[in-house]
Image 1 (cartoon, rainbow, N blue to C red):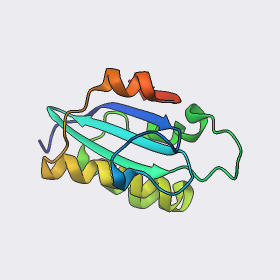
Image 2: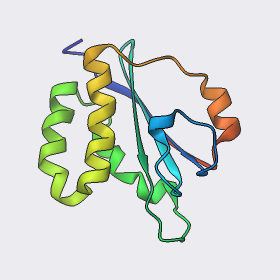
Image 3: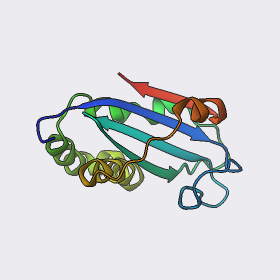
Image 4: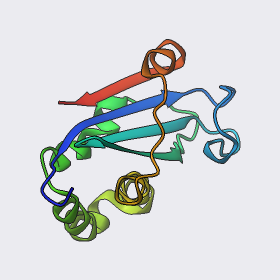
Length: 126
């Protein structure tokens, strides 16, 4: 897996009332779910989107993910540390969670079509 490259990055935004995993629900904020694929392995990360009542343009909020495109896991982890001051803790930890699941081979296959049917917004890096 060390030579596999990140080959799919998808970001889903859900309303707070969506029935997601309990750990993904964070108070009254919308929820962001990140899926990263690397070879045959998948990792998921989630975070609350603190919006102060304003709407979020997911393509703008998630544009930082473009930097991860086609990196190895090692390169992506290095980039996380370099970009932490610019990305902030929320985005950095969102990506770290997904990359950690890939490394540990813990990522579960979820029905992406069901996620697409339920999500409020969607952003993909191909």
